[in-house]
Image 1 (cartoon, one colour):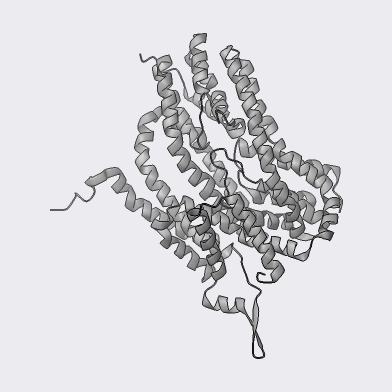
Image 2 (spheres, chains in turn brown, blue):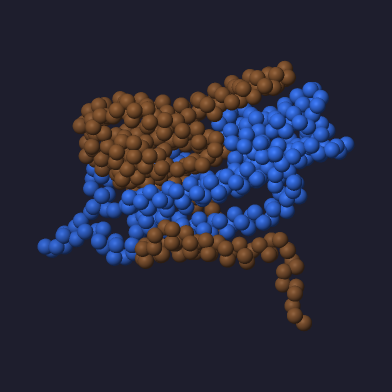
Length: 257
Length: 265
């Protein structure tokens, strides 16, 4: 199918709003799945969008931008992959083959934008030194307005050029390439999980990892159910430690004698 | 040199709403400082009638600052409390306070806010999404909306409780982070089994019978290969300090080789 002009505008707008939210209100930050789903709704196949969004959500897990570092723009991968998959009718593999490289390249735009912010910041400083505060505030307000372009531009280019170019590329692509990409899609979540284990006190609480694993691998409990068990365990740990931390040595001094 | 406090709840709410300019101003020199200035400017303007003092204060807030945006309201709120009480003489204290707290709080904020929450809610939303159910997305959104209230109230809490709260809470927050880690680790355990997918396509012939290696592996333990894969990746990343980007690239190449040779399926 061909995208209509309105669909192209809407999809680009989703990318713009996604990025703007991620750097300002952050209600949907790191929410890759919703981008796939909404794009799916726009192109008329919500189920595919949801599936691709979910796949990329899992691939991006644990891959977080902390302290101002840049990360691959997985949400735009979901937007592009969904659009390509539906318009070419060649499935998720075709979508990912275009969406992932664009998301990786998207990091560079983020870095460029932060350098651009540096120029703005120097302008703001000189305005503040001159006592022109209202002008300074106006310059600060530029940053959130154009940040969204870091996502909107690559998405626009990819979905306009995408379908025709993609079909040509995909015809050349050998099976091991697309199959390899699918296998990598299954393996990549492990990178995020490894990152998470590095953040967390794995050596101290590895036993809970085992609990979660057994619940799912052997008993097939869904993630939400496991999260509830985890919450119960977390509460018990909190309860038993909080008194020690707050009361210090006083705890245990209330024997009934 | 303490003076009359002038900021009201309304001023702080306004500053909190203006903080939603968020990380959009991030730059490599002063990081989030422009966002701080944008957020607190109306408050500073109310505090200082003298143009020179206001300028000094604005330039002071324009110094290097970076922490996780969701915990920042407590820090900036408390910093406003210090400045509202101490006035122009407290500028150094304000900056020292901000710098002293931003590191530890960023560590906690990043771990819980950016690593754990997206993992837990993202994997729930994704596992529901795989089955065609979009409701998990709204569960996540409901959480971030609820947290938005805390982000808005953070300024008032920080301003009223000030330094006292944050130092007192310091002990509790380590325990809180630890408890969150327990939840996180339990979920990660489930994710190893449900999210990481790795199968081998190898077969061997035993007499007339073609045996599938995958079937034998499944007989030992479910999800054995994903567990091994995670252990290997964790080893390289934590012990050998392999960078994430290289790890991802290496996995993609290895997967393609595996697909070409039929070892992986």
